[in-house]
Image (cartoon, rainbow, N blue to C red):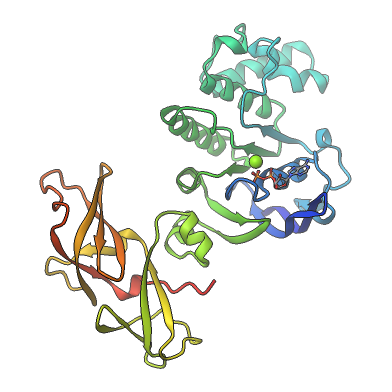
Length: 353
Ligand code: ADP
Ligand code: MG
């Protein structure tokens, strides 16, 4: 069921078009991330949804109604910013109750709602404290409670975790997701961190210089990137240079052998150079396993990442990263050791743009 619809949204700052005709549709209760590098327009899109920024053209519809004419406080949208936007001179309870007071909610109801919000964020008993007495993670939970207290119909989060330490960042993102599920509130979460977006989103919008590159579930974005930008921005990508052998038969020559690549586009021409791309986990140490692309090389780098061990293998003309599962028994091959790698040709992508 469609909840939020963005139609041909355009925004220009001083002659520089930073949002270039964005179309999106989000479902009710969905958790969607806007993911992209710094400056790609994420905050600008969020601020247009919230009403702090006016689009040059295009429409924003909530449940089918254009909200362009509404002031920010009429949109029933809660927003949390990157860092510590709490009122420093107000205690936690007054921060959380701020929007309720503005809306004229009587004190007894306001106090009950504040208590409910404190419980939701796991900070019961913290009402009388001041922001400076709280950790960064606790302050962001209070900011979340303040945004949620007036029961908004949508929640917008602009890099709410980026100022926090790595451990807190992971635990807080899980809490945010849990609270979001509990309330069933449609949420737009802005981040430049691909791992963060992949781990918590129902769907991800990958943005690049004001355009949508791809919109899909984490599984699709990671495994089936549609553009080179998405493939390299989200995760690690291997590129092997090959030459088209027979375009009709979808074969290429690679490392002196001819292999069939199902993903070879119809536009390929014989003799043309083509970049084959694949994720590190699509490459394995052959060890007798049947893979249709088999290449010999030498270990150039060994990175121990914990649950996986990543090897960089030098293939002469090419190099690939591959991940091996850490079984806690088999030590990784030594630097410089000869290895044979295998790739399933069905895991190979050929990205044309
Ligand atoms: P992101 O949040 O993805 O980092 P922003 O939406 O903040 O990107 O910014 C997109 C582009 O618009 C950037 O080049 C930024 O410098 C520019 N920009 C954002 N806000 C303004 C503004 N108020 N005035 C002028 N330029 C702006
Ligand atoms: Mg931003």
